[in-house]
Structure formats: C-alpha cells, structure tokens
Length: 146
Image (cartoon, rainbow, N blue to C red; front, side, top):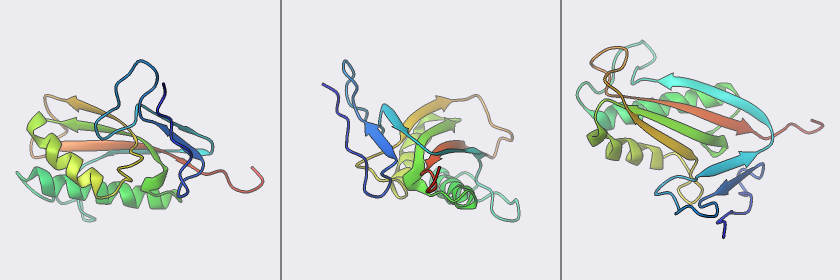
C-alpha cells in the first residue's frame, strides 16, 4: 500500500509519497514528490558567502549550514521556499559528512514531508576545500489563472 500523504496545507500543490507499493519508507526523504506549477532548478551550491569566500574550512556542519542558506536565497529569488522543494541532491567527498548535511537539511525542510533525495560520494568537488555541494529542484504553485 502506498504511503501517499495528502497535499500539505503549506504547499497544497505538492504530494509526497513516502513509500510507493513495494518500497520501504525512506529515512528522512520521500521516494516521490509530485505536483503542478513552475519548475525551479537551483544549481549546486557550495559553502560560499556573499563575497565568494569559503565558510567553514574543514567543518562539514558549517559548510552544510551555508549551503542551505544559499539554497534558501536562490529559492527566494524565484519566488519559492523550502516548502516547494521536491528534490535535493547531495554531493559529498566523504560519507562521514552526511549526518551534518542531514542535520542542516532538517533545519529547513518539513521533516514530516521531506523532499525526494539522492546522495552521491564524489572523488572531489571544484576545489579541495569544498566538502559538500547540494542542488535543489522546486515546484512553485501555479499562479491564479494559470
């Protein structure tokens, strides 16, 4: 039996499916999120401040917090917020950084209706001081009349 949740009162244009038939529920993510509206793609974000300076050298928790702050700014520029996020993709240079990344994620997403998610361990990012990168997809509710 599918564990499909009703649309969220905060994001009624989205439906989260924690466990489609034949799949165990995800731990901290939905297997499927679907909805209607305008697609917003956020490029992979690194732990850079507004001046392009690294935040949190050798500190995955600080880098993760900065990355999610940057994603929040990108979403806002498109008229969206974390309630509209349907998919997050994590890129980490060491899987030991995943708990810090998940903690930062859980500070900004609705953990009862988490987005779909993927985690990928990579050999490296654009420069060795970057420990993690996150990209996001969101669906913004259609405007009235759309």
